[in-house]
Length: 90
Image (cartoon, rainbow, N blue to C red; front, side, top):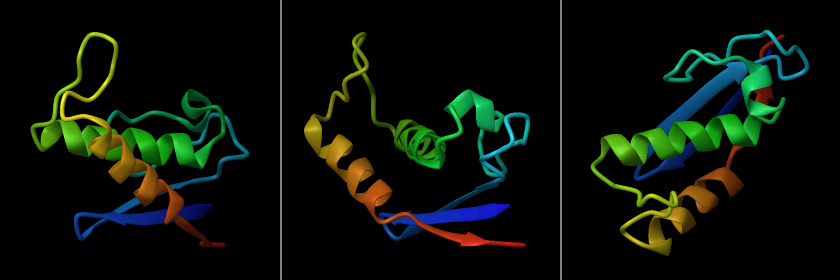
């Protein structure tokens, strides 16, 4: 298992899974998805968490999926993803 963490707005976000195992649940995923749902990509799983956070914080998307607040939201998420670190728990 590997734990992935990052920060955004001073909050720490964490997910954990064995991304080599398709059926492994992604701990920390708000929707209870598995590794296969993210194509075995921890960055995609973390991105889903950060996007969910932004939606819960009141940000909105248009019908094309673009953030109504503009590219600033996308840049915040990208920066957080670029700062993501991993550590094995085994």
